[in-house]
Image (tube, helix red, strand yellow):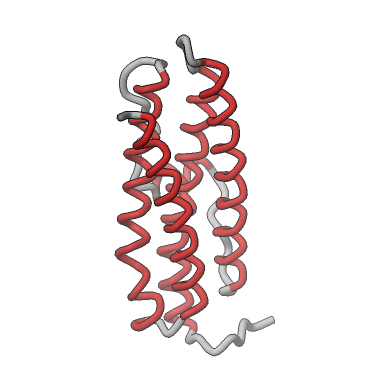
Amino acid sequence: MKTNIGISEANRKAIAGQLAKLLADEFILYTKTLNAHWNLEGPDFHSVHIYFEDLYKESAEIIDSVAERIRQLGHYAPATLKDFIGLTHLTEQMKGGNSSLNLIKNLLGDHESIIEFIRSDIREFGEAHKDAGTSDFVTSLMEKHEKTAWMLRAHLK
């Protein structure tokens, strides 16, 4: 059945394309957060291990919400690792060792990259593509990433 939500097909396609890139970034970040959770080493292992678990659970919810937003726009969400690697702005590689500070630096950089990507699309979604709903949706995601980035940054002080 045709999607009729007051946004043209061309605009929905453009928005879904940008959201697919965001979904790929979110999935790569999720994978890297699992990596950090599984491979963390050091004297602060227990507390940081638990924190990373909270982060990957939050990431899983974000991934699902982005994919569902793409579907709400009448498009299919990319759903293969190959798709994600081809669409992401992030690298799947973690640089350095498995200390909490190193892993936190890696994750912080990715959260900040996602914040910048989202910030660059917010106005376009609302103004150029006439989709205030997606603009609001990604604003909410950006705020979640900003809070996480702040907390990660605080670990590095």
